[in-house]
Length: 125
Image 1 (cartoon, rainbow, N blue to C red):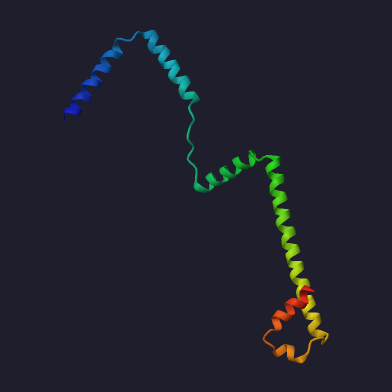
Image 2: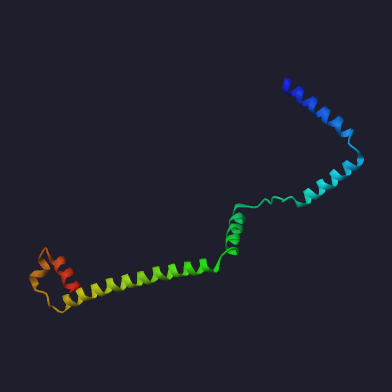
């Protein structure tokens, strides 16, 4: 209750002081207030999807050529490595398949437990 009474007294004192301010000062304060309100940023309410779109748009506006070039180099490097790795795997399988189809293997090799090790060693040669 004491705080409420103090707030009332402060408000009453400020209102009394307002009457003592000269008219020219009030005019200048009003002009400065209008200028400040004109420069104030207005918050725009938008949906979440519109916020995501503006986020992406802002990032694309600030995109640098060096960043784009670096990203392209990284993507090309990954694609080249993937192609090379797949080509190596296909070549290895091709050698194994051709050895199986050409009957260069003895019949016992198919039932041997070390058949996989032999295939890998023959593929590496």
